[in-house]
Length: 500
Image (tube, rainbow, N blue to C red; front, side, top):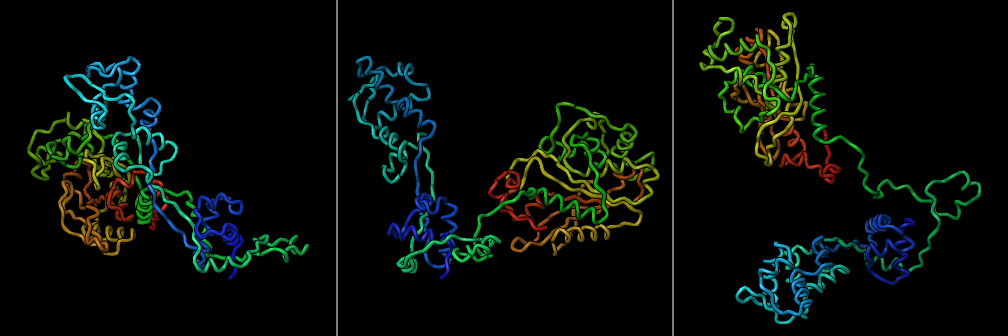
């Protein structure tokens, strides 16, 4: 059996010491190995050849907390009382005077532990000590833990008390050792010769015939190596980039809008009544400063008319909402609750000439809602909205666009079902099928209502849709908790693989 030089060095340590099992820590200190990385790499190679086993044992160790370090320097609270009495030649003290010795937070626990240990008793408000020169096992164990924290050396009930008092912390450590197998024991019975190893043959090696005296290391593509984690984008960033590339590839143009919006752009233009539940403090973040924002007065007048009477410039479109529209509500500032506002701002910005042309735009950005944080809700998340405007587009076109978009995202099974949204009619929800999870709702869509488009001067159908990118990222990455996207867990970020 041909062994690598590093493998031979590891086995030679066993041969020289005559031992069957040695810890990785001890092996790494040996002159032949010099590092844990070399030990583990060589042990893995030898394990694959059946010469050694890698043994793992989990052990718990106790270590002093900051509070434990402090009491070791200054003494336990109960010991402070005893030292105070010793200095004054006393054996008892009124409880009300203990505040001059201890912090207020220490008094009650100290009295409880003195009684538990049977060191003192309380009678008529006075603390009496039986013996001021008592031995305290907890103090001794704390001093010992400072030097050696092996938990097996100490009574478990005392350790539990010290842990509850906040004096120690428990750590679980995995200890690894390398153990010879029967095959390995047989191998080291023969002398192990370690030759100088050549990993790359040079011209000098050939000319001097040095190659004849050295071991030429074979190239093995299966040799285990240390894991390398190159720099990469955050998985959520990669999801966003993929969505952006797909939409641009489908002919869409990206647009942006401000994070801070007025209720006018966020709600009113979308024909949401001013007493709609989505506007209350449970869903929307309202700004204290600036409290109000600027809005276009001419468009405000049209939107007000459509809300109150369902008409634009005297033309009746619908029944409207039949209430008194309040302009001061329209001017209030909020953090936007959706990216649909970007689509609306874009449509409102079009000139008369531009309205005659078809348009396909999308927006990817952050939105904010006053949600209670749990496994599927955050107050801040990413959303993507898009629109298609043209004189000939219809509901079937919308379905076709969404199915194509979701398939490019990697979802092969897609279905749609009727839905309700305040500013689109008809409306739909698209669902995707995931093995083991079934059908999951992933986006909402519809055709903007005339009450939304007429005040903007648009007389063509506009297809609109929105998708939550944070939830999409959860599906793509197999996460069950949306908070994992933002915890910055380096281990998870290193391991996670994202395949577009």
